[in-house]
Image (cartoon, rainbow, N blue to C red):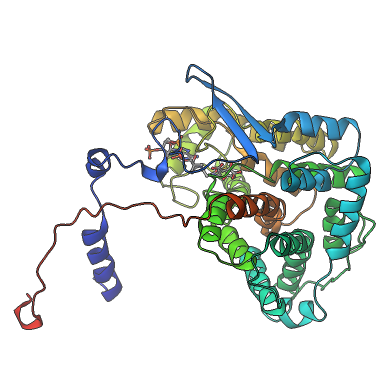
Length: 443
Ligand SMILES: CC(=O)SCCNC(=O)CCNC(=O)[C@H](O)C(C)(C)COP(=O)(O)OP(=O)(O)OC[C@H]1O[C@@H](n2cnc3c(N)ncnc32)[C@H](O)[C@@H]1OP(=O)(O)O
Ligand SMILES: O=C([O-])CC(=O)C(=O)O
């Protein structure tokens, strides 16, 4: 046994708590009961998630941003053939839909803020690159904090100002970090395009990313829709709850956003979109006959048994802490995926995704204790959408963050205005007190 193994064995021996204790002390693992109902930890005006009907039966998922149904929001924006990210940012932050004039002013304000400090790209982003763009963004944000003389000012006005500036600049931080990594580590050409203030967030993302700055209207509109679907998901999701927790300690906006980014990148949360894409490639390579559903199910079972893919036992893009029958965001994305896949000649890939979407819940139900049902979550189709838009895998989770920072910002201000109480739940110690043993008496 190596020294490290010896240590890790000791850690396990003295750290693992028997499952029965959780029942004995009535502690809800993951702060949720087996039906998926979360321990009530707060009140919010920002969004609502419904997954059970009034009789407690699982129902198709419903998501409302400031009381407006997300399906209604996205259908209206689509039918009017316009961009919606800026409008929904306004809705989530300020609590009401903007008038046309309010929206124009707000869009202009965001465009004016979309500029990094002088030499920031050269001195910070290009200086240290990583394939992990989420970490690169965090590093940039902490550097921005050092350049802000009011970094720790917690007035509502200052926090809003910092939040708007970060919302506007997230695409730049993510895409420049990607180009830097792609240049210094992959030997590709380096592109640092400036944003165009006359373009929307989605259009600017494509402009900054593409060597020739070109994109089609439909590509930008699909990206805009994907961003809208990722902007907000209640106070209890891991990264937004992190916002509430760290905001309650009185930390600054930059540190709060970095904490939430660190949560979001986890593979069980926003990091799942990269994993889905890699997992689908892996299944595709290892299943010899894509029409053979039994062979696909067998391979999915191997994944669950930790015998295949990343050996973590998870089928990514499936399951949700709250949703059971369906995640409405996955349904909306799927309708776009279908159209886009036909247009790009990726019909077979779409059919393969659909097959996995149907078979995975069956296999998970056979292998795990399922109480409320498992279905595709928002991360299942998002990577496929980004792939069809030609976006690199390294940016899939950063794109989630570019959208979700809006929800984090709204929740940070909600925590500041309503709580004034540090979040501090209790942990019961299950260890009996021991008497200190002198070193010469230890075995
Ligand atoms: C934006 C987002 O964050 S959406 C979620 C993105 N994450 C993923 O796609 C990763 C894969 N999915 C998962 O890991 C889980 O479904 C989670 C973390 C999202 C939710 O997990 P839970 O709250 O435990 O879900 P739930 O209570 O329904 O799970 C019941 C059982 O099914 C298992 N299960 C649920 N989903 C999956 C899955 N996709 N793969 C394997 N097992 C699963 C759980 O581990 C649990 O098993 P256990 O009781 O034997 O430990
Ligand atoms: O709500 C959750 O637990 C995870 C999720 O879907 C999100 O944050 O979008």
